[in-house]
Every structure is written in structure tokens, then in C-alpha cells.
Image 1 (cartoon, helix red, strand yellow):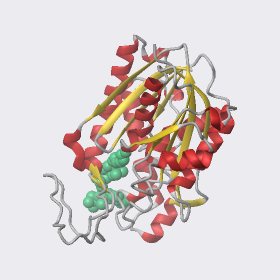
Image 2 (image 1 turned 60 degrees about the vertical axis):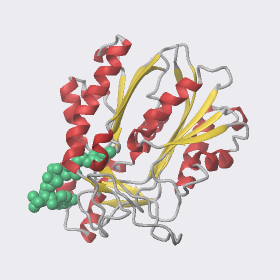
Image 3 (image 1 turned 120 degrees about the vertical axis):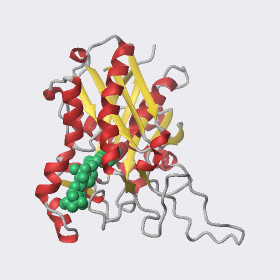
Image 4 (image 1 turned 180 degrees about the horizontal axis):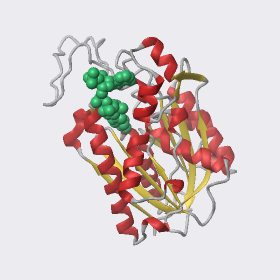
Length: 332
Ligand code: COA
């Protein structure tokens, strides 16, 4: 039986606060519009700290919180869609920074669903006797991806990192993971190969449905309405599917941690699923959407507040570019 226990959690947020009022100095927008449409007041921007630095700080804090020695970590999984390097993997940089000398390491990219996919992967490794402790870090530096002349998308995202150390547990876990590649062009960012100099290279062949003009190249592109519609449905479907697998009902869950994209998306899903709002943790007012880092930063805040307790049943649910989605239910 699969099961995971969170031994430790940690997070790192950059110092620089980008408030809604700051956005109103660079764009035709205002706090009232942003807050009422998204629930976000401010987010952090990493002016000079790369993704690997944020990821490693969050990871070190999670390892310290877990009480294990870094040498006891068997695997480092990093979820990111905004790495500093194509290679090495972000997880290898984190492994080196943390001193997890005995760990294997690889990355997972399913954008904002990254932590859910990484936790699911970790639980499967933990079924193997060779793996006891797994460090999962989800870290994003999206400021370099965002187009700060695009008032619809840039106001949503923030930088930050969250991490968790997980180990085996007798209590069960269930997951439901999904990808709908048909919606790949609802949220995308193209790799910048503009400085490639192989004389044989020709312009890229683009997948049908993707418009790549000079203005759009290499920055985050989003169809906000399409993502919104997908998100509410995907969260409800994922929670219903994972609960059906588990045989549990919504009442059996002590704590829900949804992906923190937009307060209105969360509210719609909460209403559709008839969840008690007091069981649903939301921190996006201060952080915005930090993509894969949203869920582990919630875990880190909750754990620091003593709100993650043994015996609890916790449900994580998320969605993101791909478009991907998924939910996990586990007993802590
Ligand atoms: N400030 C002021 N006005 C803005 C604005 C901003 N920051 N962003 C957009 N607007 C304007 C639009 O230009 C439009 O003006 P118009 O009617 O004159 O053309 C109007 O507000 C309505 O825009 P619209 O795109 O319909 O707004 P919306 O209610 O759909 O909200 C989002 C936009 C992005 C907040 C919403 O679609 C959303 O949250 N989508 C999901 C995105 C997401 O979660 N992405 C990450 C997934 S992991």
C-alpha cells in the first residue's frame, strides 16, 4: 500500500514585494481590479536570486525541519517549469547545495501541477526498499518569463519555492493525475533559441494552434478565460476522482490545499464540491500564483503553524499548463 508522511517542510520567498499598487505604476491596472478578480494583493519577485538558490534555501529548511541528516536522503525530486539551466537538472543543483550526497536526482515539469506529480512519483519510489526519505522541492522564478506589458497575465504570478521531506507511511494514499494536451496552447512559453548559430537551422515548425509572433516569443502566453474554465472543472473532477478511488467522502478530509491561482477559481470549486471553506487553505493574497511552489509553500506555512498533525487526512489538488491537473489524498 502506498503512503507518505511529511517529515519536514520549508519555503523561501524573495524579499522584493510587487504589490498591486506597484503594478498600477507600470500598467493600466489598479488594486481594486486585481484583488476583486484574483484575490491577490501582492507577490514576490526574485530580483537577483536564481531559481536554484530559492529551491536550495527551501530544501535546506525542509531538511532541517525533518530532523534527518542530508546523507539520509535517497532521492531529490525538483518540480519546476522555470529552471535556470536546461541541464544539469535543478534537482542536481539542490542535491549539491543541501549535501544530499547519497541521493539520486531528477526533475519533473508539469508546470503548476508539478508538486502533485512529484509527490505521486515519490510515493511510488517509497514502495521500493531502496528509498526511505525523499526531498521534493518545487521552485519557480517566473518573473523572467512574464511579459510586464501584459496586464492580464503578469499580475497573477510570483516567484518562490517550497519543499517537503517525505517518508513511508502505513496510512494509505491515493492519487489521480491527468493531462489534456489538446489545450497546450492555453498556457505556454517557448524556449529562447534566438541565439542559436548552427548554419543549418531553419525557423521552428510550430504545433498547429500556436501563434508565435515576435511580440509573443519567449514570454508566458495565456488564454485566461480558457484556463479559468478548465481549472474549475479540473479541480472538481480531480477531487471527485481521487475520493472515489479512496472510498472517502469530502467530509473525511481534514484539510484541502488547492493550487493558488485565483481566489475565484478556488471559491467556485469549493462551492461546486460543497466543501466547508474553513477546511480550505488559501495563501495567494500575499504570494500570488507561484506555480508548482504554491502547494508546498502552503504545506510549509501550515506545518510551521502546527496545523499539519499526525492522523489528519489531507487533500491536495492542482492544475496548470499542459493543461495538467491532479489530486492526492493521504493520511499524515
Ligand atoms: N487590470 C485592469 N483591467 C484588466 C486587467 C488588469 N490587470 N487584466 C485584464 N483587464 C481588462 C481586459 O483588458 C478586459 O478589458 P475589455 O473588456 O476592455 O477588453 C477586461 O479587463 C476583462 O478581461 P478578462 O480577460 O475578460 O478578465 P477576466 O475576468 O477573465 O479575468 C483573469 C482575467 C486572468 C484574472 C482570469 O481569466 C483568470 O484568472 N484566468 C485563469 C488564469 C490562471 O489561473 N492562470 C494560471 C493557471 S496555473
